[in-house]
Image (cartoon, rainbow, N blue to C red; front, side):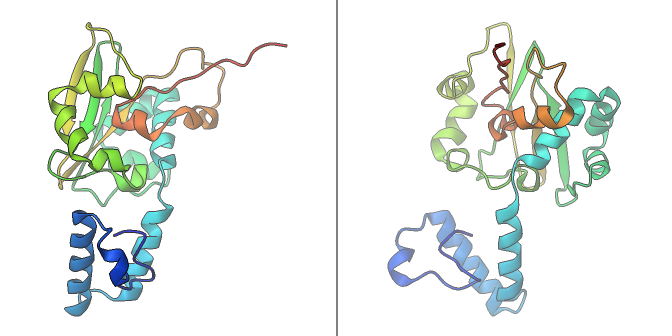
Length: 212
């Protein structure tokens, strides 16, 4: 759905032509579901509001806990949904959620070549560039070039592995912990974790405050 749909209503006619093909398709599907009685406008409104409140904060909490707690990181890799539940995060909407970890020798980059499959409950609404055809195609054919455009250049010694999300499988990247952060609390570490780093187009950064 999109911002033109307010309280489950149809977008105005003069606005419809500005919608992307995906947005128009979403509007048509929503209208059909309401017409068939499979959901109501109120249910649609509530779901849209719930999705609008999603942000990368929950994903960042998982990453920060994994950085400070090796046992939790192991549980997160083995059973992501159960580990997320330990932090009060509901990740049960996915058929399968896979957690991958970036290391000194391996870097993961997530894409959905078919459309825009994405762990919304953990990262919020996907950015426009993630849904764009250039990213979806170039992330596969030229992942290093794509990351360079985001300011991330990796040594040739680092293997780049591209992961293709599907309707049944979502990926979350645990990026490398920035150096010099041993003194930070878990909450402070979570503030360093960005949406882009959990997709793999960036790395978390930390700059130590200058001493007076």
